[in-house]
Length: 182
Length: 360
Image (cartoon, rainbow over all chains, first blue to last red):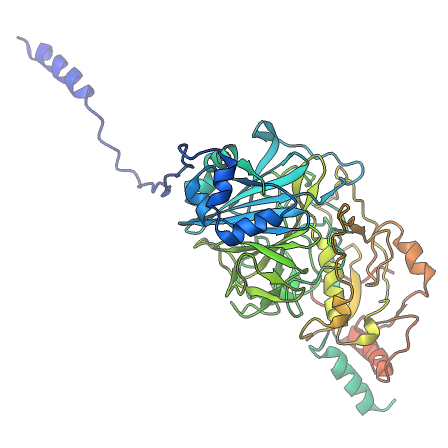
């Protein structure tokens, strides 16, 4: 066999191997913490979610004039701290490395005359704004005459935590919310 | 006048105990930092200033000295703690903000405390209400009327979720807490309110902050607690689609100038007497437009301001350090001294750094 005929198959074989990474300056990818979406296994029974609340939170909810939206995830509901005012209700949910808060407000104001506020997204089947407050993921929409805010705050490098870098976690949370009444 | 008296007057006026509070118009951001919203409406009328004592300085921490986009230097640079205030609501950000002219921007106002000491200066409750959330670097306070106040970057937080706080109660200390992410020592302050047909919005904070700050600073001088002097009005447009020319020379417009005592310790009952109206089962009280409604802080800068100003005796501006004399008020016995102060200081030092001379 001529040398050229032997060389060609060897070269082709070599080309199929993964190329060796170039010796360029290393690029450090951001450390992205995997999101932990709400458990899909949690029940959607509002009564059960209410009963899972701590007694003081249950009392707050029972005194609230506005029904509360709570995640389906029982683990979240079990640690939620509910507060309520004359025409608003809120829940603060402290989790490992992240705090979720939900605010419902019926003290609605008229928009500034001549100003039209537009949502650029949708959540829960209604127009919504999905945005940020610094590095806190926020969403707002109106549902049943109540203005809602859902926020996700990451405590450890929020600029690297996927739950605050991306919208997915916030959106999954919003989709999981269940209306819980006194 | 004899020289010792004049010298004493000058010394008093030049002392740190007195400074001119001035502010740029609402919506006038640092050149190149985005498109602001020229809206002087106080969306939280009667609000308590969120830092316990003055002086305090509202300006951009990103575009200020030592900020990511600002001049190089230290965040402790004196330029960051000088008047005039500057709005940074709607300052360039990538995220959606429906009330900003560009549709994106900064949600609130950055405020620096009297000096750049970390974890020293108290932030306080802007209104009576309840703490609804305490995150790793945020505290949310829901006022009784449904207005929410957000405090970011605090340390030494003194409140827990569910706590009921009274206007002026301590919340936490101004710091640079950002979950391990870099920022300067400042308070990021938001006002959030519900808007029919939309949801919750981060409302402009500047008008409410100016109103609250003037109330805070006036408390050590009861004579300044009522009608304060009015200045050359700056007509502001509250419509969303009207933008200002952010590229214009910042030195050509007229800042509002008010003399205030500087070292003010705490809020006082005078302030509390103007608490936010409680919820009464109807819609929350409308925002007060400082440009049209009569206010007691003398900084009306919107449409109608001129009429309001001229309805009262016009302010008597005194030359010198820019001190102004309230027109209809009996001055304290030392007022003549301040008038003399005014004479000398303008010659000696002019206005505060960065504050252009008022347009006559």
